[in-house]
Amino acid sequence: NRNVDENLWCEDNSGLERVDINAMLFSEKYCLNKIATSLGYLDDARMYQMQMDSIRLYFNSYFFDVDTPGFVNIDIENGQKLMADDVIGYALWSGLAALDVASFYAQKINVEIADGTYKQKFESGDFDISYYYFLISGLKLYKFEEEANQLLDILLETVIRDSQNKPLPSYGMNKTVNDNSSLTAAVLLLLLNY
Image (cartoon, rainbow, N blue to C red; front, side, top):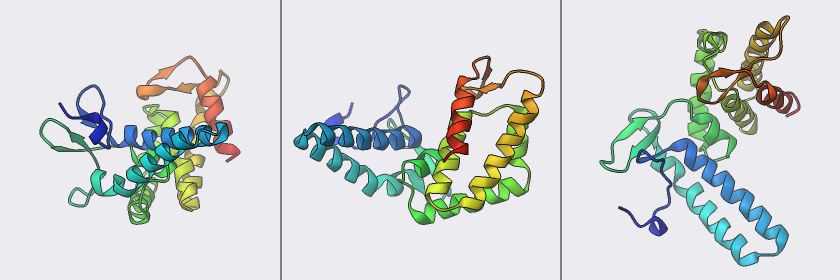
């Protein structure tokens, strides 16, 4: 196996260096940097800043494949690149996506809004609402307001339709619907007040 101290990326338990996990890793380092700075642990803050700088510098060149084109996960055993679906939200939200990559995905999202892909996905209930918090907030961060607002409107219409005469549904992790509506309520309040 690899020396983790010399490896920039983290992997999941199946041996994949994943886009979403590494975007979240960047966000964790950002948070730890802020905490260390706030507590006066300046050596720790510098270490986290260095880690963030490395991730930011190499993220797009490592995880974005121009031939695919799109973000890919990397199998550490054989180096195979596997198309990574539903990950641009994490890359946008964390601020890691290069502007040209963000623009590429915004165009793709526009097409999928126009052709009804998102409406169908939301109407089927086969989605994780927390992912759409990352996607919509990330689009706003990159100033793709129109795409963000269109996605939010489609999502809100779905929630209103699904909630008529019954409690707010919860579109949970791993694309499953469960009975806990707290996550849905929290995500929607965050998006409405962003």
